[in-house]
Image (cartoon, rainbow, N blue to C red):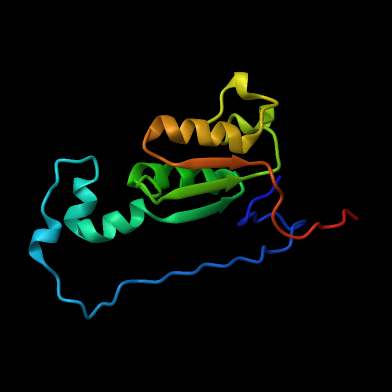
Length: 149
C-alpha cells in the first residue's frame, strides 16, 4: 500500500513536492469573467472566473496513492473539472490491489473489485463521475523502498 499522507508509524513521511504557479494577484479582474456559462462548473466560475477554470481543465496532474485521502482528492478533481480540458491529463498510480478490508474505507470500491488494481478501478469510477476527465491509470510504485524490520 502506498499513500503520501499515511500516518502509520511504520512508514516514514513521504517526500512530497507541491508546485503551484498562481496567477498574479495584481491583475485587474474583469466582471464578465465571472458570468455563468451554463456549464456544470458555473458555481466555481462565479468564484474563480472562467480563465482560471480553463487553466484547471487543462492542468496536468499526477496523483499517487489511493488510501482514504487519495480517493477524496480524485473525486474532488473529477467534480471540479480538473484535467477535463483538451490539454488536461490526470495520471494516477498505486501499486496495490483492492482487498476486502478496503471496502469499508473507500467508497469507490465494490465487492466485485477485490483483486483488481486500485488505480484502474479508481480511474474508471472517476470517469463515471465526470466523462470529460482525461485520466490514465498506472500501477507503478513512486518513492523509496522501505525495508521491513
